[in-house]
Length: 91
Image 1 (spheres, rainbow, N blue to C red):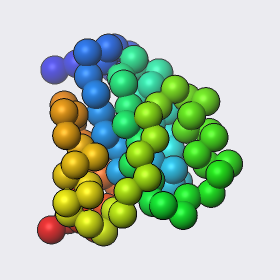
Image 2: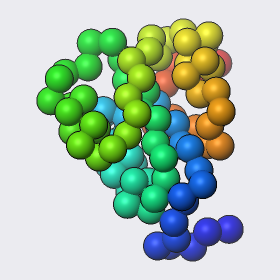
Image 3: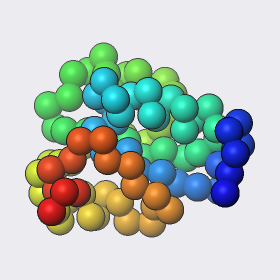
Image 4: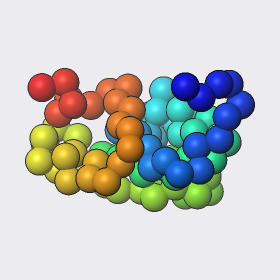
């Protein structure tokens, strides 16, 4: 198990709701630890929130977070999925 301050350089982590108030800080910590992050955001996400994610160096994927198929496709190949708020992930 990785300890505090560890790096995650070989990991791709998907964060659903990455532009939100909880998802954003999660993305930041993951990037600080060296993880490759794929940020799932809703199609109507504000441009300033998208730009903040892009500055962190993440891959941004706009998906319908209420669609199981869309979320599953966006999560393909990830080693971990973090879902602070994703309706499709709760089914």
